[in-house]
Length: 140
Image (cartoon, rainbow, N blue to C red):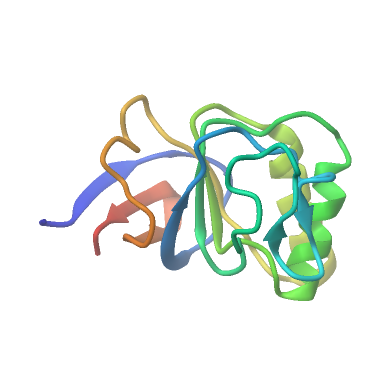
């Protein structure tokens, strides 16, 4: 399959390159992500146990708690955060977590909002590049 380029909206900028992890349901990082291991630990999430560290995380939306921003920043500090987060709708809590991590630890974790249909056909393990300005390359 030929690489496909998409322009996303940037909530927090940066670059990343990694394998996609497509979540089938939204996730709250507070209580849903173990920042020490990078594992999804939400007992009610169908993908419980998967590792998010270094992956380009695609999910329909964040879910809930403002504490998710601190969990995300802690995962960035610990080196267990996703490489990037691609969302179906804006989530300012996740963007704040990425901004805090950038300010405190000088590490950027891109948080982008995909246009409708952009994630269609993206599968777990597919290579994704996040370039400056919100350009995404699927299957790169």
